[in-house]
Length: 457
Image 1: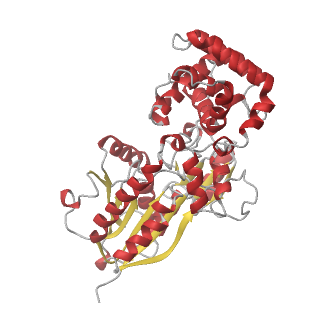
Image 2 (image 1 turned 180 degrees about the vertical axis):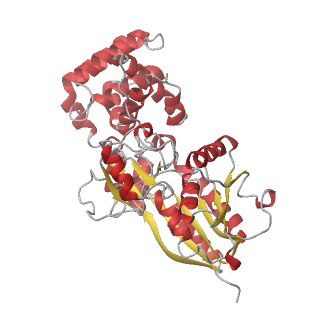
């Protein structure tokens, strides 16, 4: 999930009417409320209408807490799901004229039209109209009445807000505010194709301005479809957040060339799909320097690793298996380095996946932390003495980061924690008091812990 970016609305010679876009956005919202991921919900939209609908949908998800609070002010009872989704879609887009993609009056008018034209909401069209017309008349008072609700103010579930307060008492407000902004589009330059200055110049020649970030990244001033990036199809670059670009250099720094007899390093990328970090490891090491196994439990997702490596002209052994059960796939030869990008709540990449906050439940954190502990326990014995394991998650919750590693170190006396970034909180250029010389630029939330196995006494 961490390598994606916001959709780019393509120019369409025959753009669908706004009522139709609102209708489709509401359908996607209803699906997400029913437990469907945003990726799946928006993929169900007809391709010619998907960019515009997804752009509207992301805005709705970033303002959904406020919209639901306003709907409770307007209606004593929750409407049927389809009508409620349409009503909340309109309120999320229209509640603040400064943020609205269209004039609030236009959004209201078109939302009512959408209700009339959909058999599933036609019976509630008058109700939707009455609620939204009242909203236009009483907007300031209604918004003021919801300002006292934390979920409306921060557009996150209450449990999420409370957990951030506990985990990051000095930074929780900054994290929540960053989560409600659009993430930048960041590229990783492929050194086999070009160096960063040369690719930055190639972008500039196409009118695309970019700023250097991380060791080999470029952050675009404005996001663009990948098809518009010079050489993308040929492997010139990949889309990868600046924080995610730390994984490969952290794991390999100081290890390359240390295998006996000049043999390639044996490297495992566990939980490897979609293959962004797999590719970065291979790019950074160079031809023949590492022997890499990319492990993925989901067969369908494993095909994305093949696609990623194919576009970049790279090769790894892709294995479909469960990392928790090494006896089913491991050949008994220890690894020099293991990258464990563990399944997590994805609480650090909410800017790119705004549906995550509404899909997760508080109990998910505990269940995922248990899975992470199982993965660490299963993979640590596969590391050779003197070798390393890099544990990372795209989470800002300490239960999935610092607390997880503290518990691991307490139970594994042969593990030493090397200098590591720890928790990286989402950094947005739109948030005041950002660090001007931050080498990562805007970035997602991540956790990194680099562990080294100590030789036996």
